[in-house]
Amino acid sequence: MRACIQRVSEARVTVGGEVVGSIGTGLVVLLGVGQGDGPAEVDWLAEKVIGLRIFEDDDGKMNRSLAEVGGALLVVSQFTLYGDARRGRRPSFSDAAPPELAERLYELFVARVEAAGIETATGKFREHMFVSLVNDGPVTLWLDTALSA
Image 1: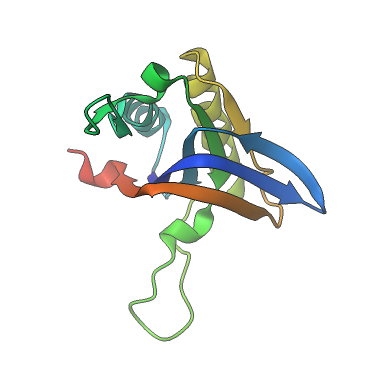
Image 2: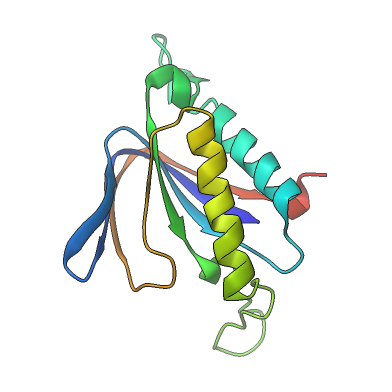
């Protein structure tokens, strides 16, 4: 699994002119599911995202987690994180999981972070979405479960 994580002061997802998910302070997680991903990758990534200490403490150092600042998550499916543009000009998405598996693991990720007590909003899987956010910092991180070993 891959996640592009952005610390935000606010964010929202719109589908068909309707806001389907929004948060204030927290993290936007653009989540991609790859071939061979399963529940173990979901668990690792959910725990990592929840525990990231990327919010500032009273001394201005990144030392607080999402839960410590009372932040929320906006999770958006993003198969294009598996785009491979090393050859040619059009990316290949052959490393992305098939939509049925990707949706199941996306929903499992959302369930895991919600079960940890994190307020969570989402986009809509397999829909054309408009994501608006105010990146705070800016702080943007890339996590990949294939690189976690």
